[in-house]
Image (cartoon, rainbow, N blue to C red; front, side, top):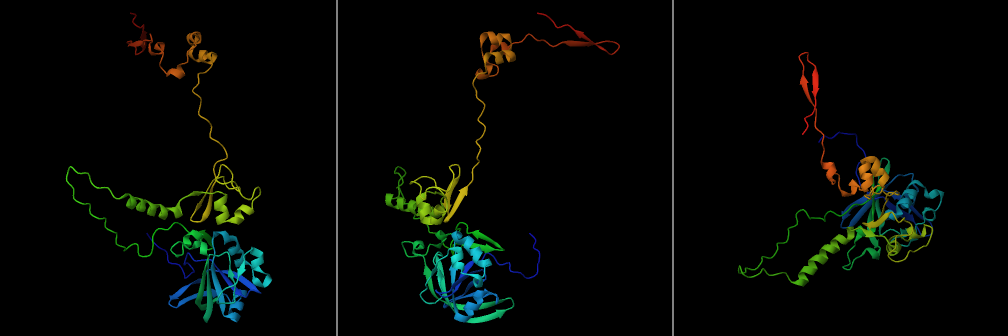
Length: 348
C-alpha cells in the first residue's frame, strides 16, 4: 500500500452535521456546522468554529451562549437547508418545519426534533484565520426519553444519527464493538462435572439456557430487518405516512401506504430502507406438455403420427425404434492411381 502526500486540508471525517441554535425564543436562529467536538470531559468543554460573516457568529458573540443539537436522518433535508440559507433573510425554523423549544440553562432555543441537545455557555473566543473558535462549557444536556432504555442508559444508536464526510451526508452503520472490547477478557465457561462413562453428561438448567438465548436475541434485535407496518411508521416517522396520498394509516400488519406491494421495506438501525424489486416477472419455464400430434408427425415421421406418441414426455430415446438402426458405414479401397473406390456394405 502506498500513500500520496497532499497539502494541508480538512480531511478529518466523519463529523456530526450539528444544528447550532442561537438567539432566543422570540428570535430563534439555527445553522449547520460540522466543525465542532469535545475538548475536555471534566468539566465538559466543547467548541464550535464559525465564520465571522455568519449571522450565528453575530448572535453567539452577543449572547455568549448556543445549543448543539444532534440531528437524525429524518432531518437531513432540514440540515442541508439551514446550512445554505441565512437567518438574516428570514425564519429558518418556519422554513424547514423545525420546532424551537426552550432550554433549561440558556436563553437560546433547542430543536425539539433532535434526540440530544447540549446547552453551552461561551468561555472564550479564539480567532483562527477563516473561522473563530467559540470555546464553551456544556451546562445541561437534553435527551429524548424514547431513546432511554429500562436501565436508564441512552440507547442513541436507535435514533438514526447522521454523519458528514467531505460534502456528503451519511447514515451510521452497524455497531461492531464497544469501548475496550479488544482487551476485554472473555468469561471462562464453568467446567463440566466429572461423570462416569455410563452416566449422561448433565444438561444446563432450562432457565439458564433461556437467559442466554434471550440475551442474544436482545443484542441482535437492534440490527434485525423488520417489516414496516403502519405502527412502525407512525412510531418512527409520522411525517412519512402523512406526506403520501391515500389512507394516512394502513391496517395492522399491512404494507406501508407509501410503498408498493413489490417493494420490500424494513427498518435497519432506525433507518427506513426500501428495496426496489423488478416490475417485470420472469418468463415462465417452457411447459413439458406434449406437442400436438401434427407437430410430432413433422418431426418424427408418419410412424409417430400413427401411434400418437410423444418422445419428449417419455425421454429422448425411450422408444425402441430410436435405439435400433440398420445403418452400416461404407468402406473405401485405395486404387493404384491414388483414388478411392467405395465398397458396398456387407449384407447379412
